Image (tube, rainbow, N blue to C red; front, side):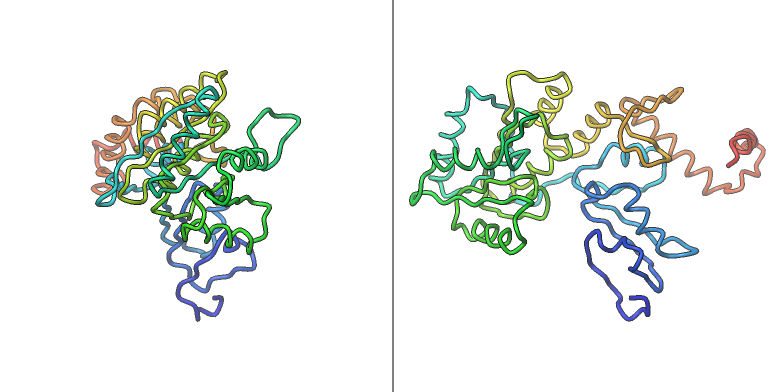
Length: 325
């Protein structure tokens, strides 16, 4: 790579390590960008000096900070807002513990139709500090409801060895197991078109971006798919709003805007990824359209008069000079 003998390098977070040296990095593409921190992405972009490479970031769920940066003109954005041909919108439903038997019955119905099911837990093992559903207890309960040999169940979590994770995943991909009990390790990179049901336990413990990513593991085939959001009875105001947003829409950008409203865009010039920004005039959650128009006008002015030498741009030039720009 340092000698320029490799033209394309595909890797994980390891590519941001200091020992990875490029002779002339021209393009840096970050897939699933929400899985990378701000500093991590910047470390990759800084690997070419003195000129930074072209940068492309991709995600199904724009994080609030990125949405805010887009409004400020730091990124150009392309939107793919259509489902692939033959796919249907995922039906999303909110259920609490008193609906547990009905949820089990629905899973049985889908399996009888030849479909497969994901069940996602926020934790691997029981915790004394948090009263949450956990994968190991859940696996035992599901095994009682769906006994062998009639049913086969896969289990997948981050503490498993890589070979064991791959073995369990391939069993599910081949249709040898009907149910995948997992943590959020299945959030990205999993494609099983026959899986039609996603059950998320303790939904209130997940953020909107993560919920949208998990839901995206189903709905990848032509059959109708479902996402069941399980939660406790007592929910905070924010948790209720997150769940209502997920039930209401499958649109990733609408979900990002709701996330922006709930969490704030973070520090636009730093590394904080959430928190409310107190702007004097604009509300990033409400003023998206006018900010977009302002951005387009600014771009036209800079294209037409990049040094702001024209008389009509004198006020802009003076203001920017005061700001030290």
